[in-house]
Image (cartoon, rainbow, N blue to C red):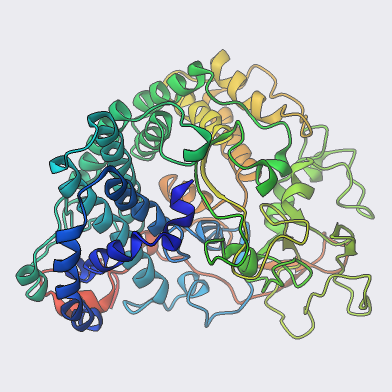
Length: 544
């Protein structure tokens, strides 16, 4: 679709000047000079752009393009390193891992990157929503493009609130004078959420259910409804969330993909389960592919990966045996072969000792080196938790360094089923539709885990659904937000340990210093540079 190739389109050279006005919004010292130097270019672009349907389309493509970057959504799965099921492998000093140590400061690099990247998306959406209404183009196309822009603005604001709490709300972009003397204050989260709901409702009314193949990946009616349902679930509007998700389920527009591993593979992109994803180009060498394969993959991946995120033994523990029982309660568990007879999703998500990837064996044994084994520098990097990521990584020679083709799925039908089950259970307890939704996920072809038997209480079903979210959605980046909304993030065991050997997962070795989450970490610090430039922008409590 066009968003994946937007930077290679000559028309976008004009847009790149226009969107440099992000500096207006953030008004940081570092970019004020850059902005002032581009004013004349902006004025030229304003005279030549915003004329045709192609211009409007390219402007909206520019909003999608803002999603690609690793600081916004391009590394979304990295959120899971802030949870018990994954860890950063580069130690305390790295910008992402620093969030889970007792030293998070207002100059935290990850917080600043997320803040600016998400506002970049807001700026581009605002720009399109300001300019497109006055254009003389086909009214149906105009309405659809505005719906896409509203969906994308809502997406960025939704996650700004999830990360930072109260944030400045702009639905029109500030002018030059306002940017040079910023007076923005933080808007209460409730007001920002109200705008998110408004944008999503209007997007739902304007967007189609499907697109022609050439436009695959654009926001649809049900993408807007699914994001609305997620927002309602996070706000504990369980009845509203259940209603939103039920409409998607009843539409029959989506279905579980019959291959759990293949669901995330570039060969099956835009499959029956995908509701909204970030589209990356499958033309290697264009600079429009993903970067996450380089960060997540091992040295044996075709991306020559850095292995910056490692699944933990906590995730392995979460996978049931094939009889549906936890490993420590099942007669199927054999301590000498601890990975046998597990939920098949384990080996489709994680590369564990004894498993192969691209015909090479993974081992924690320092003696197992050479061409037959995956290169894994456990001996010189003791931070590594003993497992590698498999989910969403290319298993062939396609995953080029920093330019791989695999799309990043943000909303999928399996998630909708589990969110529906969670919301409906809170509304009415475990009725038949709750069992149907969770069991549909568990009975996916190739997974075929035992169904959840009837007779559960509401509280029992709540814990079952939460567990199912861990194993079904592992390493997709959502568990961090789940723990926060369940108010469990500062209560879970965040220790990073690895198995003692290839076959011994009972005895465990500490791999990292204990990770600590204080209550005020539930929202990130506002970037200090922005606070310094604008005294009205108050810092989140607890940060110095």
